[in-house]
Length: 429
Image (cartoon, rainbow, N blue to C red; front, side, top):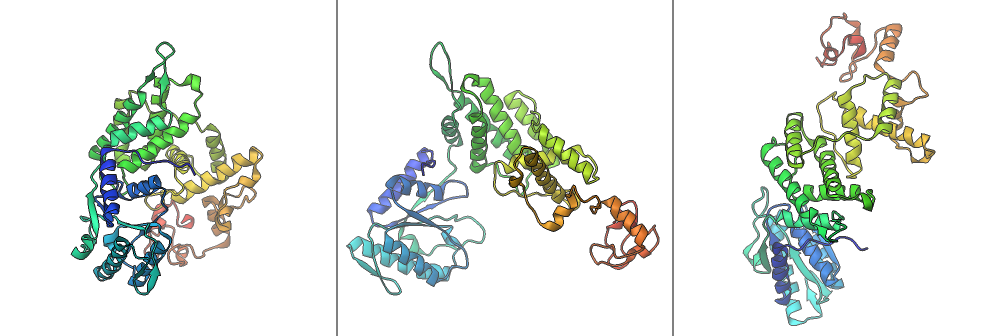
């Protein structure tokens, strides 16, 4: 369909020039550089600009010479372009075999042959092309053989100009206003681009180093696209410069704040308020909060404002990304949070007359939040049932009958697990 195109920066133009020159010389192209610089995306966008079908292969250590032969045979047979991403992840022995096959393909194209001899004779479409991308400084990568390097024209991909990309994305998302007197467009998108890029640059330097933090180009693009969804909901007559700033502020707060650890929350709020001169916006999911509180009461759980905030943040993240990861310590409420969110959305959809839009999960876990079952396995019902039925297996680690011991028992008598230390009584573990 009519999907998006790449923002053309000076780096993109230079890469286009090198790759098209490689095609003219009947050679392959090899963009290389660190992650997030647009190596693969640039090759894909060039193929789109030329009207060529391109297939991207994600290379790994498990690739064998036979699998590479099948890939090359398909590409030269149909005349498509092939981009082998992270090509230096392949073993050196396999790379040497691939060098001979690639050399045979490029030589056959240069002499205008109609077939090429790989493992067997394969029909050749001269419109095919081969590209590889790799990160030479990354750990665990192989060094490309010299005979393979000579077959590709290299191009170093460095960090692009984030501000130019952000300006174009804001403009394409409709972040523009018009004055009634001058009828000229205010360049609010340039101002917003500078602010967003500055925020991500400051966050990368001042926040703590966490393995799940990402403040690079991918994060900037995600925040702008998320702000564009808010922008589409605003009526054109209400579009002002302040309204657009509020949209970007709220989008960045919804997108970045949920992934921060506790020690970085205050730093992020100060940085955001200093650049946008605003305070943290309030959550506007009142219906979801009411449904959540009702289900908390039904499940006989404790109301916790921090837990409710995390559930609302999870809901915001689910509207942006298809896959989400809940990170936290043991017994911090990770499973309970997504179950409560799913149950709350089900309750809201049922009240709105859409019972078929329920969020489903396994039958065993659904019993925990079943409104019909008043004997759901809550802490209170587990306590009363064990008092009535007498001692039984209670340790979740070893399933021992340690509850037969005294009430003052500090841990499981067989595996020394910490379940008894986490509750008021060993009957409630």
